[in-house]
Structures are given as structure tokens and as C-alpha cells.
Amino acid sequence: MRGSLRCCTCQARTAREGTVNLIQAIGKLKRSIGIENGIRELGVDQDAFDEVLSRMAQTAMADRCTPTNPRQPTEEELEHIYRKSY
Image 1 (cartoon, helix red, strand yellow):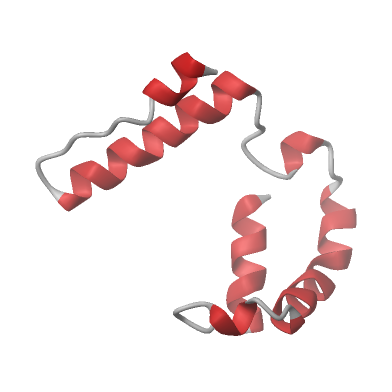
Image 2 (tube, one colour; image 1 turned 135 degrees about the vertical axis):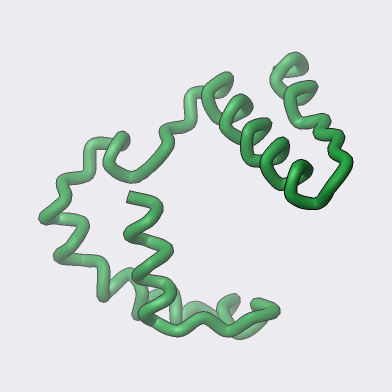
């Protein structure tokens, strides 16, 4: 695990370069510890995912942590995030 942590040291000359470097470092860390890239890779069927998508977004909206976010998401935005994570 110690070697995995070293992959997260990101240096950059611009904010954009830093963002790209961070995304790459997170991907490298995920691969090194065996985290899948998305929900599909975990074996979740597309139809099953679509069936519960709205309910997942509604549950996230009702979560008591959601109002503490710096930006309040809409239910549609949460569904979009879930779709992107599939």
C-alpha cells in the first residue's frame, strides 16, 4: 500500500494540468488496489440499474448529508451522475 500512496503526488504548472494529473493518479491508485472503474464492472445489469435509478436519486435527495453540500443538486443531476458512474 505504501507504494500506492506515492502515485498521488501530483505536480502541475496550471490548474488544468493539476486536474488531469490528479485524475490520472486516482486511476492509477484505483487499479493498484483493485477498485473497479464503474458500476457495470461490478456486474450490475443495465436493466436492473435503470430500474432503480430514479429511486437511488430520490434516496440521495432525502439523505441528511445532501443539504450540506456547497451546491444543492437536483434529482436529475444526481441521476446524471449515477449514469456516468455506470
